[in-house]
Image 1 (tube, rainbow, N blue to C red):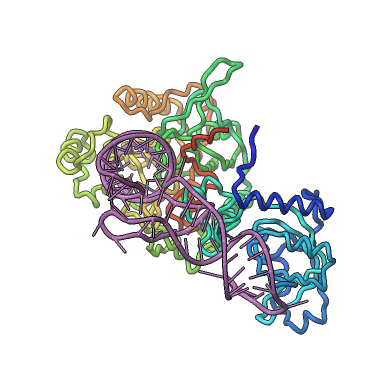
Image 2 (cartoon, rainbow, N blue to C red; image 1 turned 90 degrees about the horizontal axis):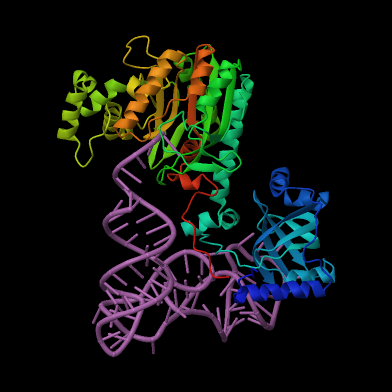
Length: 499
RNA sequence: GGUCCCUUAGCUCAAUUGGCAGAGCAAUUGACUCUUAAUCAAUAGGUUGUAGGUUCGAUUCCUACAGGGAUCACCA
């Protein structure tokens, strides 16, 4: 049996709750019929003067959590917070019923109350409810963190996110922004006649990306399943089935380290459209970001990590192999030659193990020399086949694919391509992956026969793309840690206290 | 997983060279009918993350462990 942890302050609050019950007050009432959100009140009356308010006799019913109490004998002010805005209320002994004033005297910071009363402006002109009736709604048995500094301890902020949300307004703003962003993204695709779909989170084969999966167990079937690392291969089965435009916003799971930019589960937007290629999706990406820019930025400037980044499309386009040459000084011939590349890495990149495959060497070159330099939004195009097992061969150079990634502030934001729809080519790419795995690349995929059968049925030419929602939220909220944009980021579990 | 840093009252933070563990907010009691980081007076609140060690004496020095942060590795 669990008991409430009783420190001095909680004991006192429990006693106050008992006194309320002795007054005949319901300790845990069932509802409160409020007429306004605080923000509605603020918006509606912001231009109404003190004098006009006196005449109008505007009565409101509203409810919120007490963030501050300033008691002055027979009257007092409180600030309430309803999760969106704050509202000041004024309680006077000669105005509220006697019982209500007794209740008021037993209130603590953190309690939630409902009030009814007419609006007025104080001497300092703050819009305030002159309380005529006060309704007790719930007692908070623990004190709130300090009002001035708020809750600073990151661990407490993430583990007890509810406290963070009550006390730190910025936190609330970040999650409002995130929600609005996802809403705008959905609208963007709905307007273009995309169908929103949900594909499995548990896969018999983890495919569609290069990553190590989480393993879970299905008892009745007696098999292991993998939490998906990407929805890609299922979404493309839908393309085969004739769904012409689809998108999915949902979680992916990757069994890797936790860092400032990585959470084991993260939210991914993926979208696909038949009869289009990667050029079309580069443009669509710019259109989508343009919508977000207009909603979240002023003058299209991203303020990130102390830098100002111009986010106005169109964005710079560079070739993957060219940009590596430009930033590292290697020649294109050397870069295309595995042995010469190996020699270059040995000579110039120290403290790194030699990657097991040619593809991994290219990724090392890119990560080491290029990624951090891409601060202004930049499309990196034409990734080599070796590291793009699901993208269609380039029309220009068959060693490359029609794949692009978008980088902003040194972060990978999107990854898209002309989808490979040749089942024979796809099979050989999968087989190359198997060879990579044998060479020691434990993120290489296996052969997905079921997916190949779908492709054999015939998939029209298509473009597809994935975007990391958490990282977008980081960019637009100006936060440099993914934990700030995920309500409950993964932390090591605390060892439970002895019960 | 490696390296470095952090952990003191409910919260935000102090504590000199190793020498009585303190402040603000929150809380309690009292005063106060336009305050807004309300004000004034008084009071209470601590096994200094945990377990060891060195020492006459440890918040302070050492070791291990736990949690967090930064960074590297892996990745989006």
